[in-house]
Length: 472
Image (cartoon, rainbow, N blue to C red):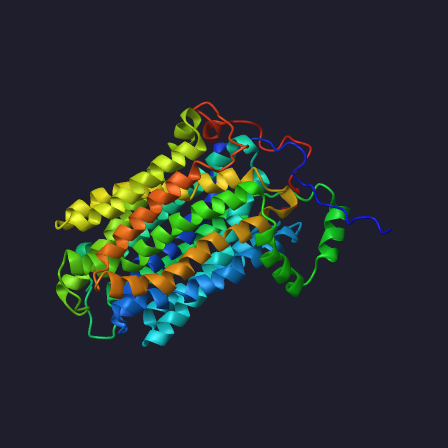
């Protein structure tokens, strides 16, 4: 009988605690990634409507993004698990390629001239951003010990918040601070939106380059076993098969988190897809995309998104403390409940400024969604499949987006009588359900730490038996 193939166990040895600046450097690239996502989330529905899309068609047009993500993230995770370069490491080559492609897509997106071009560019842009994003999640599991993972994901969330604060508000800032027009002829994207995307493309690339050149990765502990595993599982088709079979072989914690993710991300996609039509119609009382009122409302949606991301950036720093005194499950419940109530409250608002209060609740939820599930998940995964399972876990972001694309247009038109504000209320209810489901997650890796935890640690950078390659 042939012997079993060796298993790579690069994380079997103790990982050193990283210092504040090491965590900062490894997380900084998310600033750029979120520039891309924030511009996409706050402006793509606006671009679709400018190109002539009907309100009930918008969710369907967003399907381009999740369809691609369903393929891209698990494949990239699978490939990055089997990559090692003495110069570039394991995850960083994918950061770089994705950043270059995403930056180019951000430059092209505001120059589309037809609806089909806008949908196609969303497909390209979202795919490219996902190529960069997925390995960032795995990097935390690769480099940080269990007791620092909540902090690592919270640091990513901080940069996500900071990036989105600026990116979401850019069209509003260009108009109100620099006097650049936020209106244009029918079928033309305003200059304020175009300039925002141009800046986003540059920032995306520069931020990711910072992480690429200022982060060191650990080589596999057993290089011979790593190479044997890579040879045994080589090939794109094998990677595709393994990725989709992984959904049937998930650890128990991952299965439980999958349901939590489904309902929380369904709520987020309802918000991202329908905030612009909901706020412009329910509060600004217009659906005319060439009108001053519509474009003021659309700009204010960007400000609202900036606020919730700003709240998440600050609140992310409090998550390790809150989890320390409750648990990660209870923390997630409290945060998602705040977000659900925030979305539901939009129905009762007529003064646009009060929307900022709604966004405080959404920001608290967003901080937790980007941190807590990944911290719970990382402790349940085998180290040699960290990137692979993080990619598979993306299914439960992509699937609710696909469900949103197929169903929310129907609900908005036929159940809610073309009043998208009710779609936001539905999203709020979904977020609260997600929080309740978080209580049933088996979080065996929930390590309670002092409130001063890892961000202030000044431990030696690399003092364990597994050392980063000095050539990196």
